[in-house]
Length: 261
Image 1 (tube, one colour):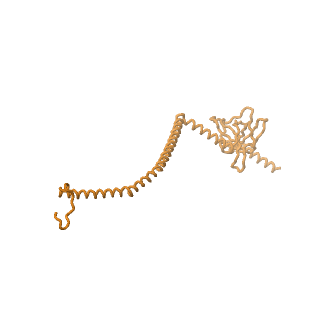
Image 2 (tube, rainbow, N blue to C red; image 1 turned 180 degrees about the vertical axis):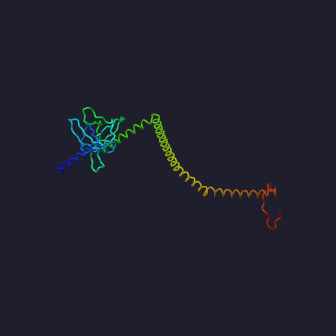
Image 3 (cartoon, rainbow, N blue to C red; image 1 turned 90 degrees about the vertical axis):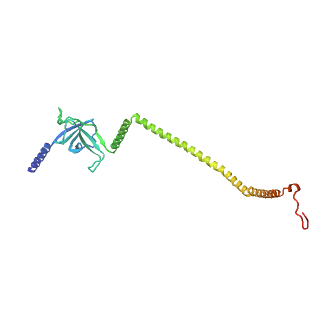
């Protein structure tokens, strides 16, 4: 009996000491609190400041939650509670639910107890689930926001300049394509001309051979005959200059032996 009394006294003393260090707050929400249980952590800006002591269904659409928070937790009239389900926890298991507290205003007054309520009531924000799907959705929202920001930064003048640059690049491409066609035409014409030049070169070679084998020898013979004729004429002219009478009497044969001139 004495042991029971002592244990009861120790428990009461511990409870009184704990009550002196903690304050009780209430949350009323219409959102689903699936997964939220007693002893679930309560965090203020990510730092654990207490725990959930009771989760109670008030009516088909309302749930009342009691929180035990350390008295030094900076709960003010600007504090809002959010029930957050986390898909991946650092505590060694997945899918636990916490109550997150944040200041969303600038009212520094302590949280007051409304009339007819046993504890101060912290207003709630819509529940949220932090998991991989939420993270991906957040990334998509960030990308969309960045796209909209870029569109707002790129004014119509900048967009028009970019369009002009693209048009100029396309024009350069078309010009290069046209020059390529012209170059192909030049190559084709050059090949055609080279094919026509081959017979001409062959004919020229035949002509050179004919000159070397036929025309030039005949020309050499004609020049030799002309040279002999020129020598004969020179000899006749010499005789006539020595004896002009030859032109009257003609040329006579020289006298034989024993004949007088």
